[in-house]
Image (cartoon, rainbow over all chains, first blue to last red; front, side, top):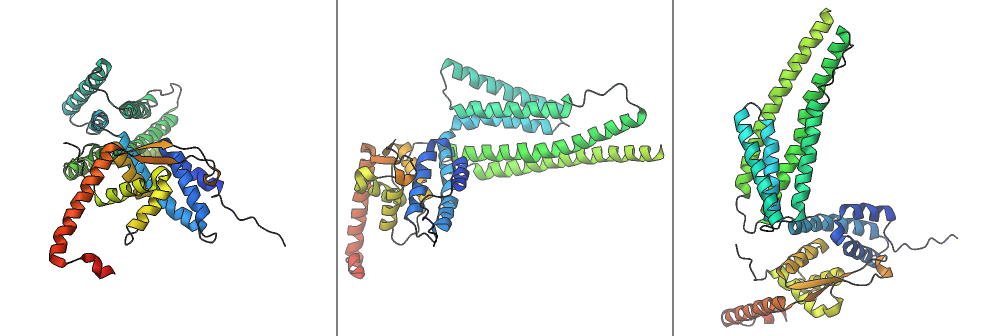
Length: 243
Length: 116
């Protein structure tokens, strides 16, 4: 008869998954506690118990660590970056967009100067939020403008149409992806940061409402832009068919 | 807004567990003790971590990492110790609870009799 040794350790792959989910600051003690509980459980229900512990523990630990890391200063530092990003979406009102970009820029520079003079120390998460903001802005600039400027000179009429078509499709999809994957989560994260970082913050519901209205406006503007690009595409396709 | 030094019921349970466990106060043992004290409620391990983080931020407890052990897969424990502000807050809570118990006893009689 083959004896299978009783497993007292959680499977490695499972530990690796949980480890990747936990913030480094509390990874070791939390993983150790989960490991210890796994060993104490009935062998038949260990897996299930471990999974249950992970599901009930990891989100709470993440939330708690976020609350500890985010301060009101970090939320204030991240907010102008988000505001600037949102202003880019409402491109029909150019003067309004420029004012917001200018004010946000002055605010960010002011925060940096205050920090450099030692008058206002902020958490390193501010730097992280700003770095992320710059990466996002650079990616957006590269995606929208960088690639579309280089049009090969030696293209035939048909090839040029095909190139134009690809470019229209890319721009049509880019805006939507940027909104869903970048702008919306960033706004929700900052709102969450404000509510957990500022004790007694009561503006959460109001801000959420304002954010919902703003996102509706951005989504509407994006939809209009998509429709315009789609119409251009249709015209181009008809021209190709006629040719 | 000034930070409140009063304790919630769950925080009282966690601090009581830290006091009674002494040097052996870490995630699992605190969870077990809280579960024992709050016999009617289901308490998750995650809730214990959240409460301990909050208490540490308030300066009521302090923590340190112990030596790694084999039972934990070679990982260290985060042990907790009650600090002076925590002791004061817990004593205040106990005094309030005692006054409440005394007031209620005058009206309802000894509530412990119902459970005997």
